[in-house]
Image (tube, rainbow, N blue to C red; front, top):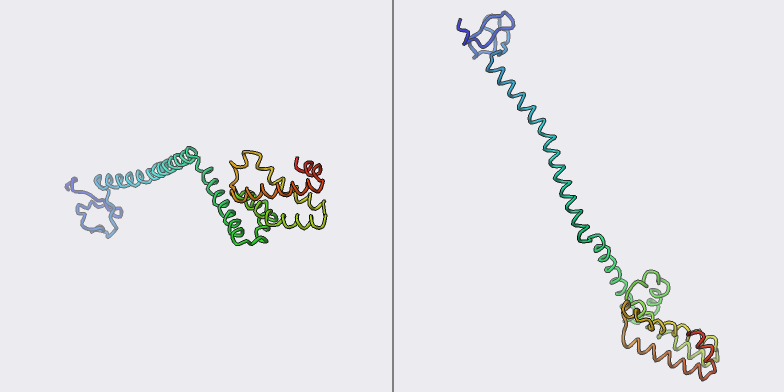
Length: 219
């Protein structure tokens, strides 16, 4: 018997089988198990390789997670560095203001005074943030109140005259604050028309002997 050629021991009859071409014992027909050192080492290496690969998965996953967190940290840092949230908020606010201004401008140019009143008076909380809100409010005032003032003058309704004057004078007095022109948009023609109307009503009220009442309202 050549021991160096024995690669299988039959688990059934215990016979030494030196050939590996068959999977069954030629003596009893029992399935053979390869117990050779070469085959044992091979199986051990396969197990080690599979185990190493399995153990490497958590490490790879950990590296992926760490890399993802690093990227998120960098992005977050850049967002803070360039003040992205505030810029996004400002851009959104600007878009809204532009939309409000377009509404006001469209109503004014089409002389839709009812719609302009809706925006300026009844929806004031929304539209007052528009930079040209007071421009169009003044334009609306000049369309509505001078005829009413003249009507009150013809009817000798001094109380109504003083009330209308107060509305226009308060609007005009806002311009005394230089900050007004830095914050809000204005129109030269509308500004000139407001000044002219306030001065006109001032003279009429003086002629009617209402100077004291008028100055109490204005100052």
